[in-house]
Image (cartoon, rainbow, N blue to C red):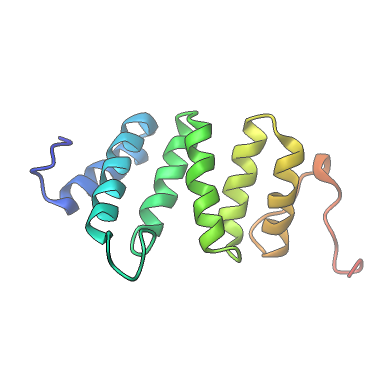
Length: 135
């Protein structure tokens, strides 16, 4: 089903269905092919390779995370965070990826940013969350 002859929307639907069924490794493979295809078509445009691939890349990072391909998830998420440093959800995903790798000190910054940006409340192990009285 992952042949390049299939229409893009059909392959995207297939990748999402794999993800939804918890088949993260298969979804990651399919999504990586889709991202590569979109980025190869975007080469030479002023928008750069991330334009139009953000949602795909977030889903790809989540599939990598779900299939324990944590190094790959980290690479994708760092690129996304660099492009959108004010996106709390991306910081949350990166922080959780780093946590799962056992890199708690590295995770602390991203989890704190996710909290400040409104998408996450840090667990006690990472320091007490601020309350409205503390601000």
